[in-house]
Image (cartoon, rainbow, N blue to C red; front, top):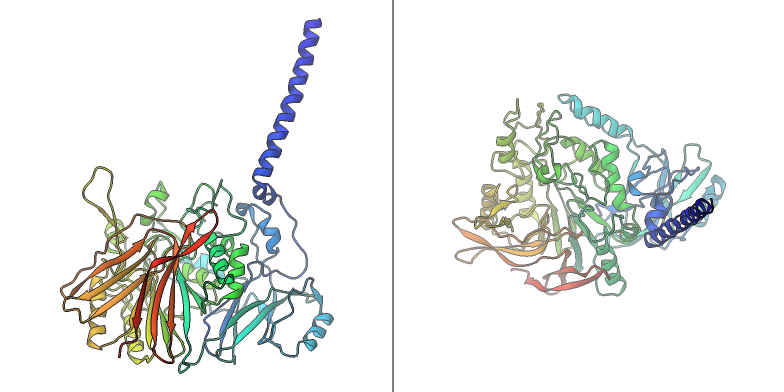
Length: 611
């Protein structure tokens, strides 16, 4: 009996000890991973007006206008950040929005929602401010239609019905002028009015203005393969590149007028062990990828300070190496992560375009050409290219799939698998830009009197390509065959010939897609013509093997001048515009991911304006 009682007593003590040990381990784990433990707690919905939880962005800035963008959600940013990202309820909420803007600083912050009477009184005290009219969200938009593909049309209709984005254009602005703005938001009942955070930007100078200018460009915001993604927890603050960049700005070691996000602003087709599963290519899942990025504090801090121009590429349009071919009946193959580049399923081209435009301060709608150009004084004109919608289908995928019913491209015509918008035209087999974009590019280049002409392309034009040498093999596997380096060589040759024939000078490329930073050069054998390309690098630490330039032709050849296998961005400067105009290009890379230390790469490029 005593032994039995002792056993029970011992068992009880062991049980208590085990409970204490487990509790201690749980407490230790909670302190070790506070963000994960804190964010997984479910939170109730917050009443009152909607929230601009992802902040605001300003884009398409000109001398007298700019586009302001935001999105109305039912929960504030701080509530969403406290939840695990896979469980966040990014639910849109209808309401009314107007913008207050001024050349003077605005009161910051307005800590609580105002009654309608208090807001009216606030307006009277803001003598220097202007206010746009109230605009209801969701906004009335031109419908997107694809009558020949019911599966895609159903998704497009769902996306249009659940679109709570805000796009407002400010007009009659003054050139070369700093502005401050904020959103004011009220709910359907209009009983309370909530103030957003204050943002700032400067308008572009007039085309004749002899003002120096600079910008940064970067690409590839891959969430799934990222040094910030530690222990399976999406970072609480955001990409460390933002932190390093902003610290250099605050220290006075870097300055620029605007940013260009050169494609792959998210990766719709990627997933990782610590990140959310690949979206089902429904509008809600596609939007969540953007919200996960733009919700984070470092991203919001960046866009509060700088205007940005946005381009799309394969990953933020559809999937890796995407072209306009679409078959809703094609299911993803097994082992998607390994062979995802061959996936031909959703999202369709029109849905990918709609969601991208919904999430950024760009012109949008079925007839909104994604390629465009803008001027920044006498010294600089920039061209933003479209590298996906207008291309001829990738030959490798056509041969692999042999989609039933696929016909030759025809302008402005749908069929079950392929459609080219009016602004593209019907491309030939060797066209990646399409004839209409090619003609627009050449005509606008010839008519420009800017001292320096920068063409920004989401995919490389000169290269590098990419060679991967499998283990125990001396023959490389050549990747990245979907761009001008290899796939559209004839179109590139026509472009180079046109530049030489028209004697167009001071033309340069800034290109993306490759996950490192580089400088390439094409030069004719007689050395009378040279064209440079500057790689804008990845923003996230998604680095791939270094590659080679594949492009060759009879008149000259391309070469990789220099490259750095690091994540970073390119900084383009046009200086001494009033006296002796110069172009300087330099790169920045992440030197230390632990401290988010961003350093300037030793390689740089300088040029004077050609006579």
